Image (cartoon, rainbow over the protein chains, first blue to last red):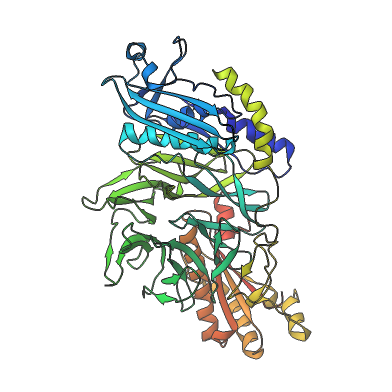
Amino acid sequence: MTRSISRAPWILALLCLLSAGAARAQLTIEIVGGGATTIPIAIVPFASDVYPLSTTAVVSADLARSGLFKLVDAGGVVPRPSRAEQVRYSDWTSRGADAVVVGSMTPQPDGRVEVRFALLDTVKQGELAGVTYVVQPAQLRATAHRIADVIYEKLTGDAGVFSTRIAYIAKQGPRYELLVAEADGFNPQSIVSSNEPLLSPVWSPDGTRIAYVSLENKKPVVYVQSLSTGGRQVIANFRGSNSAPAWSPDSSRLVVTLTKDGGSQLYLINADGSGVQRLTSSGGIDTEANFAADGRSVLFTSDRGGSPQIYRLTLGGGAIERMTYDGSYNVSPRNLPDGRGFVFVRRDGGRFNIALQDFATRQVQVLTQGSLDESPSVAPNGKLIIYASETGGRGILAAVSSDGRVKQRLTAAASDVREPAWGPLLK
Amino acid sequence: MQASVQKLLISALFASLLAACGTTPTTDSGAPVEDRNVGSGTTGAATSGTATGNVAGTATGSQGNRLRDPNSILSKRSVYFDFDSYEVKDDYKPLIDAHARYLQGERNGRMTIQGNTDERGSREYNIALGQRRADAVKKMMMLLGATEAQIETVSFGKEKPRNSGHDEGAWTENRRDDFVYRGE
């Protein structure tokens, strides 16, 4: 069953398309599979939620999209509660809601809005969270995502990622665009556009910059671009190809793949392009580096053993260990933030799928069922993996939970979307 | 609730449209670009994809004519590969030999070999595979008289397919090296 969750992005996308010839690739998200257990939650429309983008609706859509919540009808309770002390628990337990959210919005004399909400446990009959924000009206959408993050964290124990951003590449005709959007696909902003391919965007862990590869100079060159100023810098343009950037956890350095000394090999380079230092020396291909969260090692793809497999390089010592053995094509490794394992792309009988391998047990779980799934990127809470897929010859983005149960599909009208990169948690 | 959401959306759209639908990228105004390694060219993040840097220059005179003469083997510029392979097939050895000898005779001649792959598999791994295809031909040309300085090898991976189809015919066409001389 396919359930359309958020109508708003679709409408916005359509109007963009009508109003501007070159509309940005707005993503529409659908859930195509749900969690094992869902938490029934009632979200009571906030009092005076009269602003153009309904805060209650954004919070509800965020939680529903995660696949971990079941929204319980909150209509018909009179009087409608907007504060914790107004909640009669029996109203909500009788509807099967384990949790209820109430809130209110109050305009301030200076034009800002006070947004106040409370999350209540109807079983234990107590308040789990209560936060008040005073924000500009333009910040209401961001505030709604923060509220959803608080609710998600309180009820699941994991950090919410509704306030994060995603980057991706959209191809429309001959035009390539690197876009940054909110995690729910809203407000895509063009970061760079080109008539030549763009690929491999990666966020600096501090969220200020994106590194990517552009072919605009008739060869792959690695750029780092600031999101605040839009200014960018070439950080690797050596003889040959320069590609596959990966940030260190402290955002000071990157590992890139260079061919300047013959063959594709890994090099460490400062974020300003200085201080190039060779990391690997194999006769084969070494590429697609990805740092562990502790910064002590990188996973990478190498064909040193005859077929492309995933290896781990310990920095400092230089020890290299093969991680994958099953199958003849295992590529694009990305560490999970908790250090428990990694996701990667494996080819099996001509199909390419996203899989997860545990470091300790070496057990592999295949998470996706497409035919051309690639470019995985892990959400900063480790719970969702966004990746590129394909349907009817067109590129789409999809997301899957790290247990393989929740599946989302993100499509953009009239454009090919690919190369997703999940941004860091807001500090 | 749903109805009021929709109603509110309408008024929101005018505000959102301004924010979301402008066609001017944040960087179109000419983002400062510090191209420490690039020869010249890009001054903003929005690019038109013009050739700059190492491969740019001018091929002039008789050498340029020989390269363009359709009756000359030098006008042929592509070498094709099997799936998952960077082995240069015997059929292409005369072509590679001709270009190597041309470079040997024109010591100022400079060539870029652009490696390409079919659409299957990881984008970055395909960049590396294309690079290896380009390197394989370069190695052969160096054995046949060209010098290291004359040939730069780069890869487009699967990013610039000659044939945009999704079948074996398209893939065969896309597993390819192209030779581009400086100034072309």
